[in-house]
Image (cartoon, rainbow, N blue to C red; front, side, top):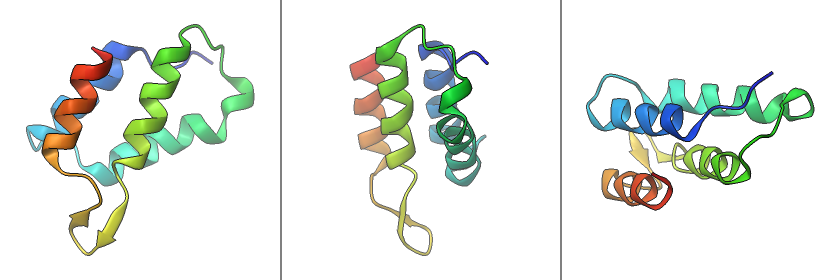
Length: 81
């Protein structure tokens, strides 16, 4: 199984910021890869770290309130893009 690329992860973040993709579905997407990490062909270690960090940004601290803001998502995208 191929790992998500940096571009795929960045597109996912853009989708969240544009309101086209939910953080919940993104969390499921990230967790799918994490739960199958033993099957992943790791090509880009930085992309893997990017994926893991994105997963932490989808954590709820209250109903409809995430631990990280949209600005934090933008910063993450800038760091890895």
